Image (tube, rainbow, N blue to C red; front, side, top):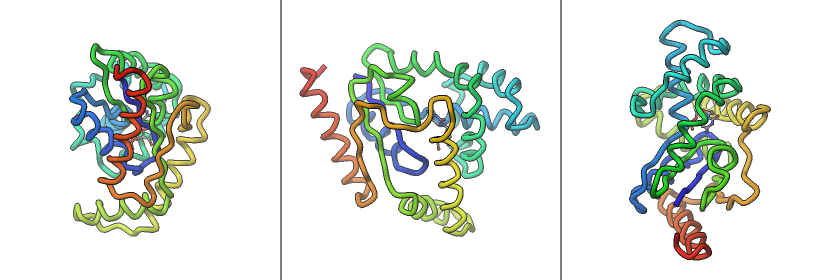
Length: 212
Ligand code: DC
């Protein structure tokens, strides 16, 4: 079974994907880490985030096994990843390994922006997570403050809105729900309620497909 979960920054899709993967004992890929990895490589080599040639080389040598979430899930890298993710050659270079991950025997759970539209259009279940920008910014702000960051809510909201605009507005693989995705609005749901809702979407899809 392939489960594809897409949604905007700080929508909680990563947490839901991880929990669904654990529940169904499936491997999980946070596809945002790939773009974060490319951005990290460019920053480390002092290349510009707009340098398409350097970004493409960084994407081509990237290995899923070398992605370290602790190192890559930092606040600043999200914006940088969103910039390199708009480079078509970078997306092309990262396509095959994501498709291979999704289509491994037994299936997988992937989360990102285009997992249901581009990476696995044939996914058994597609969920598109929505939540208002204000609620997402509030959640992210709380996490950052808890992690010791001194940051204003207004700045978190502005960054989230700018990433939303870039990720949804780019010409290649924009953040949009697949036609057959189930929309899950988590604005008024806590993580437990969101997980239960996601689980029932998956169970309903499996029942409809004869529990494949
Ligand atoms: O999910 P995240 O915040 O770690 O993603 C970081 C950026 O990477 C996001 O702003 C856009 C890009 N991204 C993408 O374009 N396609 C994906 N499938 C996943 C992430």
